[in-house]
Image 1 (cartoon, rainbow over the protein chains, first blue to last red):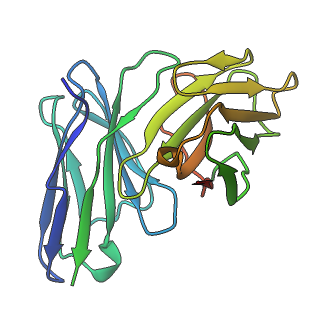
Image 2: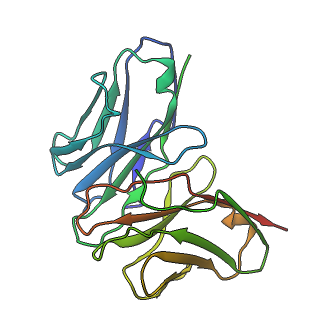
Length: 114
Length: 110
């Protein structure tokens, strides 16, 4: 296993279209996080899963956003009816549930809404 | 909100030590200090973390003051590839997420 994998790396979509991103975490990690990052800012937390359960959602996660992790392995993040303000880098990270664990990030999916 | 403050930018000469400060004056007793860095257009990369003892790994050293209100990340021999944004984060054990601030943009100059 070489780390957290995200697909696609880049996505250009027209406003109003739906998009879906995939994240494959490190295989033994049961926590999975989604973050969003806009230009010049640090990553902002969106949501996280422990196994298949979605345990926390940020206020940033509007009702157009939905995330799933159906079997506790890979996760998908869907954005419906995209808006130009959704243009950002979407980052996925995974970690174990050990007390002092670090999280490992993927390379991100850069979304451009035109 | 991030519980840390960092200078927005720093320069360092190639081959010299880069010392990146972080203030976390409201840190609680069980919160750890984590450092990540992000090279342009890549995902954040874990560097090191610690509680109260100084820590060292193959990438860097972490020096935490005795009162734990501040810390310094040391890159002993900075190279051009160390140019990145460096984030200092405090987090509880079993904490639910990592809260990033704006970080410090380190420029390593030839």
